[in-house]
Picture 1 (cartoon, rainbow over the protein chains, first blue to last red):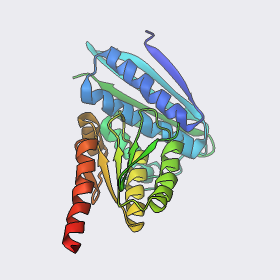
Picture 2 (cartoon, chains in turn red, cyan):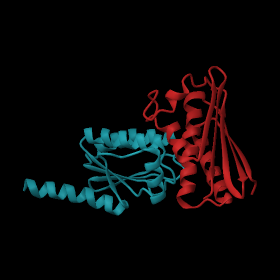
Picture 3 (cartoon, rainbow over the protein chains, first blue to last red):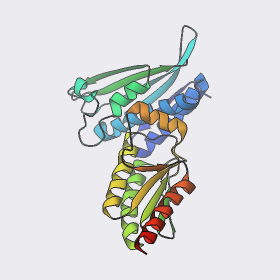
Picture 4 (cartoon, rainbow over the protein chains, first blue to last red):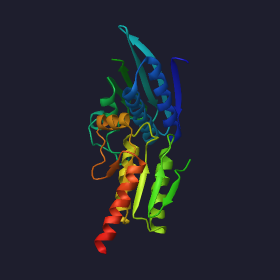
Length: 133
Length: 124
């Protein structure tokens, strides 16, 4: 199995493909049980964010290693409208009406590292990592 | 693939499969609201034991569904949330407050049939 995967996100069915790929790759990194579910859930949230706000984009997944620890790197990228107020988007309960407002802050809680770079009119890149324990 | 809905006495059973899309879940809302009226069902069990992820969209959809069915006169039980999925939901901050849950489909079905039996004997 390859240690890298890219999933084009264009339809809601692609969200499932992305999280299944993520689960496979995370298992390859040595994650177990609930961590696999946690990673798949975080991928589901950021992939849905692409569908809802940008209509299309890409989720890429990669095995990573640092100081003997293995992990997964997940990048969600789109060229959609961008997020005007990231601080607001990352607040629990803030919603544009299409979700519970827990998607991005929730994904951040599920992962070890999480960052968003977004530019209005250009798009959004979300980078997250999780390390094995 | 649409979620299949079975009728068992006064209860409807919907078994959600692993690869359910957002669209399928929205379709399930409409189908169940319609069938509850058509079959005069008093209860619905939605079994999610095959789901490996319950994200904010799935949770919100099921919560709205349970509340809409309540307004239509039917009780909803969500059954079979897997242990790993339950922990991930808690981490995400997702809850199913005020919604009946059961360990598995069988228990969910029993919850609904016992409730209606008690109601029946109460009347008689």
